[in-house]
Image (cartoon, rainbow, N blue to C red; front, side, top):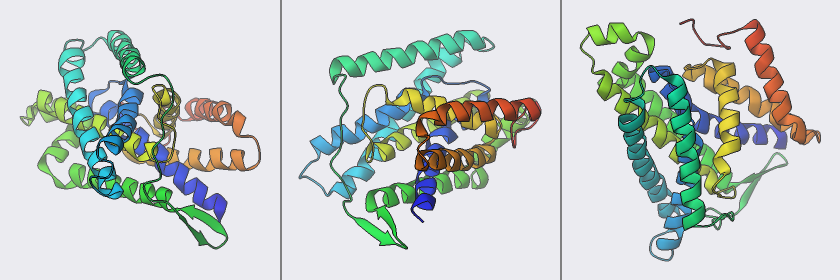
Length: 287
């Protein structure tokens, strides 16, 4: 039961972090290499607000405020990236790669120079644990799992039940057809970058409550996210969820049996094997 709980917890993190990256690529066919730093900023939003709002409002309220503030600020940052980089560098994927890679380094340096290179931690917001069928379930991780489920439910509602969300899906499926229907590509691009960046920040806030927060925390997470969205099918949200569950299972089992240090290598090998036999990923579609 403990192994199952660990699989669920790890898979929920993979889903929360990778889904924003998959959304941006699915709609815009652009990879944001600063996605990991947007995740990092979400973690620092929790750390900063935990200090500022300490003894002012309940810790649980601080947690929610940090998610909202982090998502809003980072979402706006994503829109600025769209206006200043992606829009100006359209049809130049290598230039976009270099620009967002440079942005990621800039954000890392800004954090190092203003806050410091050392990792930071947040005191347990929801302390304690629950014993269930012999498994130890930290309440903080249960809360993180619950908010991840709410985040995914909110994303599903936005994409499936709102006019703007339907326009985003239409653009992802057929950009030319969406344009012929009068959908504004500029509006969709800004919306997609806001939502994708906000999802990264929310993931950072959630994981910042259980992991160490540092200026380089986004690098490894970004590597895992790339593997997940490639295996799932680049741009496929359902494929991203399936791949996140798959790698959550594999990585947890490897750690359980003492082979955790080989997890990144095994994940990369699995990615190569999937691409060899299924070039579009598990649930990806042909362009």
